Every structure is written in structure tokens, then in C-alpha cells.
Length: 425
Length: 164
Image (cartoon, rainbow over all chains, first blue to last red; front, side):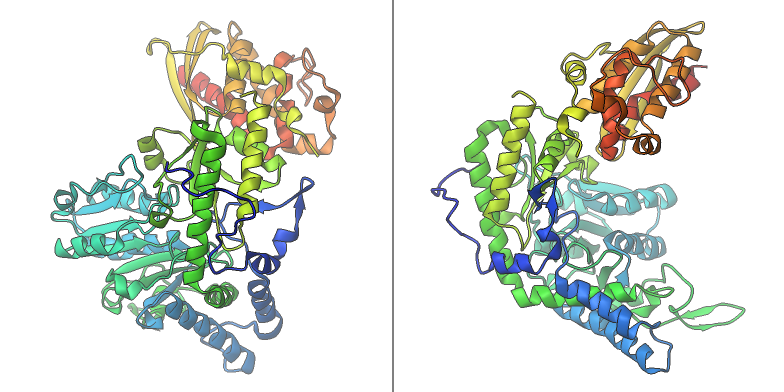
């Protein structure tokens, strides 16, 4: 861990372009007092908090325009449809999609990745076909492929992660040789590692594979242009980017979405149904069976507006600065007692800090943090293969977002010190 | 508000720092069984040597938090040398104590009074003495940790089923 090149001061405010004090007022939950303490929320990689504008948009939709979409001929049904499709257009613009037709709403990123594996994969993969993933994937980008190993006999190959938290690409050419799919996280949910997206996409395409990106940790934090990546599919989720739970997105090129059979089937996703069969609807509705998460989409549209208002360049700048502060200040305070996993250079990572303190189990550590109002996740973070590579069963993970500041990082440090005292280290 | 001292009783920390019956038994003849807490990744490996209807020996491997490790250690001390029927009764009593519903209804109970040992396990198993295991009663005030405390007991029951 690179440490203290810069003198530390709690008054220093390397917060980039964000006015965090003003932003904090937009998030009602941050006013809560828990266990007699101010709420210090450091678990945004798990789920983010929601600004008032998102909560209001959802409430306004239900109070004023609630109706089913794509079928009513009355005013509020038209309003609901316009709000739902308007949200799709906002999301498409936010992530740099070619058109809203490329934006499929799903329940979450997990469902989106399952759509890729189960719909595209079952239609296109055969026994022995190699699928390449990485050791730092979330279970959502592992288990659907495990199922295809069992169902179809595909071969699952793993790009290893090195001790510095970056992917080890020395053997990449051999790993992708003959591959049909290369599927990887844009940013690790455990280490914060930013992976070389364009390089992996290019290598995948050169090998004749499609490129699938789990962008769940990336889209909320870094300016995103999915079309510019040149990938085939990208998945992300609404609730990590100030939106509500229950809505995620599968982005795909029109070409590959057209070539992918429907996943879930039923109402909404058809053009015609007869006793003999069905004709799927056009993109993107072909993949949206049943009544969709309408209010959730409206909420996600408001979340996109909120983040656009802040400016994603400023969001990224803020997080790089705050991550640097956290790495420096925690390392200076605890030295070798605190092991922070992942890349040491803030510019090469997101604001996700997985750490262990001496041999204190993360569950015991976060139990004490909770007594101090500090919300931090403990466990394997749905990435058990990575945890085995790191040689740990679990870590504590603090993750930063637009409403966090140096005071939150300092509160984390104070709570870690209290845990150390409590357990007698 | 429950405090940390309700959860981390001194006897729990003692078992965590000095776990009893740690190790392995050769299996077979011993029964080897694994348990997982999918929430936090805690893993336990239990070795049971059952002779006749008596738990003659028990060893514990794996890793986890202080609650899961101390609970496993205390469990091993409590069941070693007991008959399978006694172990099953003890297990019922312990899991009854870990039932959040009964605890939340009958107030704070023993943990609040600082009763640490020799207490009678309630919950309809009045004849079963929980002894040191009573120290884990405070865990129910931290619902997320209940699975940590019951992991070794659920794994034990699985092992008894497999051994019979």
C-alpha cells in the first residue's frame, strides 16, 4: 500500500467537484440517528441510498399516473407508458447506448446476466465451447455459467487475479483461444479493481467470442459509454445507482439482441399468440415478459437525472479523491494491522475497500462498527472463488459514494480502533 | 439497546481464544460432516466418533467468527460423552433458546440479569441443563448472528443422522 505521500489534515477537502454537504441533504436517510450515533453509511457497493427526487418520482407516479403500460387507451395509461419509456430513454442516454431499443429492463443485474447465459447461451453454445470469466467475478457472473457446464457441457475458463488485485493477463491469448464468450466485471465488487475493458473486448472479438460486461459496480461511479466499449452485452442494476430495488438493465447491441431468443415468456413480450405458437415482440419488449417494474423504472429515470445533475466526471473525481484519503489515512493510522486488499493506486480502482484487521473476524469487527453507527458489509461479498484466491474466508468492505466524505472515513477509523480495544488487541 | 457485552460474554471470548476439541479424527471410522453459513462464508468441519449410542469423541475444524467458533467449542464440550438421545435433547433446548420469536416475546430474560452458568434451559425442555451454553442467550438480540451460533449444532444434527 502506498502511504502518506501527502500530509493529512481533516480540514483538507480533496473532494473533487462535489458539494457533499449539499448532496447529503438530498438523502433523507442520512438524517437518521442509529444507536445514538449519526448514520455513517459505507455500504453503497451493496446498495446505494436514494435521494428525495427518486422517492418523490415513485410516489408521484403511484399517486398521479399509476396504470399498466403499453395497453391502456386512457390518459393515465398514456402517462404511465410515457414515464416508463421515458425512463428507458434516460437510461440509454446515461450509459451511451445507441438507442433505447438496446436497453432491456430486468429485475436486477443478476437476471440480466442470466438472460445472457440462459437465452443467448442455450441457443448458441454447444458441448466443449469455452466460456472465459475471471476470478474476481460476482457469483451472478459465475453460477449461470456453472449451470451451462452442467446442462450443455461448456468449458469454463478463469482469468486469474494477481496479488496486486489486477487481472493477470499473461496467459490471456491461450485462455481465449477458441472461446465463444468472454464475460467479466468492469469493476470488482470486492477489490474495486478497474479492469481493462476495451482490451478484453478486443481480445474476445479477435478470438471470435462475444464480450459480456458486468457493469454493476461501474455504471454508478464512472462515466459510461457502453456503445464505445464495443461489447455485445452489459448488465447493471438500478439500486446501486441511487435508484430503487427491483430494476436492472441488460444493454445489448441490436444485432445480438435480435439473434437472442426470448428468456422469460408470457404477456407483453409477444406480437401474436395462436394455438400453434407465438411471435415475439420487437426489441426491447421481446425480453420483458409480464407487467414490468414500472414505478421502479420511473425511479431509475429520476436516479439517472440526479446523477447527471451531479455530473459523472465529478462523481468519479470525488471518489478517486476520497478513496485516496481513505487508503492514506487508514494506512497511516493502523499500519500493518489493517490489510486493505486490491490496487493501491486510487486512479486504478473504485471506492471499494475490502479489509481485514489483524485476525479479528470481519463479522466481529462489523458488529462493533454497527455500535458506532458505521454500516459496513462483512462476508464473502458473493465472490467466494476470489476470497479463496485472496486466502481469506471473509473481509469487511467499506464502499464510498457521492454522499460520503472524509468525516465518514474518519468515523470508520474511530470505530475500527474501538473494535480493536474491545477485543483486546 | 443491547450492548456488545450482551453478545460477547467473557466465557464466549474464552472459548474463541482457546477452542476446545479442535482438530480431526480419521474418517472413517469417524463421521465427517461439513456445515456452511452462506451469509458470511463461515465453514465448520465436524468429526464424530459414535460408539454404541454414545458420542465418544468429537473434533472441530474450519473457521469463522467468534460466535460460530465459540459456539462450536462449547457444543463440543457439552456433547462429548453424552448419549445420542441426550445430545438431541440438548440440541433442541439450545435451538429453542436461539428462537428469536420466543425471546422477543418474553423480554430480555437471563442475559439481562447476567445469569451466566448452570441455568435451566427453558422453552419446554426444563429438564435439560444448558450450563455454559446459556452464555450464548444474548445472541438472539443480534438476529443476524443467530445463524453463527446454530451452525455447529445444525452440522452436529446432520452428522448424527449420517452416523446412524
